[in-house]
Image 1 (tube, chains in turn purple, yellow):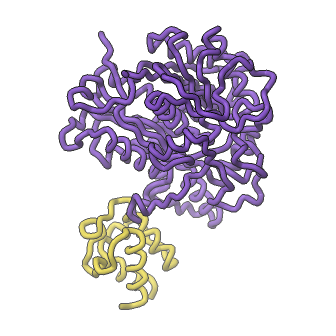
Image 2 (image 1 turned 90 degrees about the horizontal axis):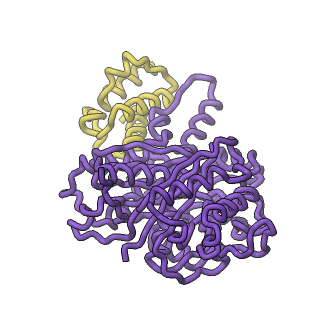
Image 3 (image 1 turned 135 degrees about the vertical axis):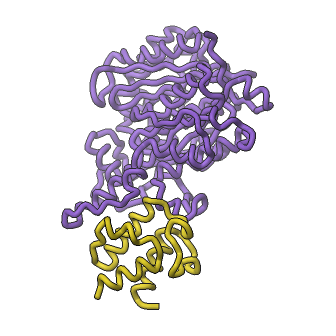
Length: 416
Length: 78
């Protein structure tokens, strides 16, 4: 059976460096850091006191009071960015066959703040389990796609993908495949996360996963720099409208890019540590090339997972060299996490959007905060350090890897 | 309005996000004030907390209007 072609026709973003796609791109282009001292809770006792929070956000601008109480922040973010993407796509909701529209959404954790606060309340009590009836439905990761479908009446495939920081990349790949196979015409996909809470910060701190550069938060996320000391937790949401090519063409849609394929793999190695030889990461990029029917030389840019952790960054670049050989030097490699921080389950989606916008604008956003070369990193690689680079891009890839050893990689192609 | 009635009203306004004027004695939580099954459970739990009473499930089922809630609580607090 011949697979259908799939294109991106709408984008939505709510990120620490911009609250919509336009602002997000401005932030990416100008190398803006989203990191700042945490405002959500008192960090006095915490090892890391900063994160990439969403700025100038008031849920009341988007939801009424009752909705706010029923939605954890990760679900609020999901609704806001998916609304932006749907509107951007120009799809007429009164005309589209809603049985053929699905929602596949990624969240690495889900409603962590809801979970945390309900358990704190319980622990403060006398043991009587007086849990709020909204506790479970607010907290579960799949409530984000659930709410998107309820809001718009989308009756196609609907669920959440959970693969830690690869969650929304897995969501995009599943969404791509449903359209390819003819099960849906349109898929709302992406991911959201809101884990900047005491439980989130404390939990990641205990793993020694987070940067502790408290004296200079904006310089903390520094992928590939010799003095990187961990990732910076971010939050937010990215949404993409994937659409069957003929369906998009028939309604005269604006097309951002074609989604040409996705690769998946597992490290099968350790709960949190990257495989020292990067075998799973090598496999995921090879799988993506094969699935996308690409030769290594076709790839112009890679938005890396690049979280700014000592081990992960080196392993990923080594894997890129293995997969792409000599061509690795010609690829514009970057990590937009240097600006946004690490959005966990939303990372794959916001970074895919960054890759698509880079193609649209023929400009590769920089990896900011690079000061000192790491001797374990090949100096011949072009890591797009500190300044954006102009380049006509035909094919871009976006990598994401999650705790648990989940790897996912998505490839996009310009139709221009 | 009794103290209990006004406190009941305040809880309903807060939890259901409705206008104070809508919270009349005969208003039904589900038919008039837009509550679903989860909202109704939450309301009952808030009443229990606010008035320090226990409302058993079989009795909670009979509380579906503002007036029923107020009378039940007034009776329980006697």
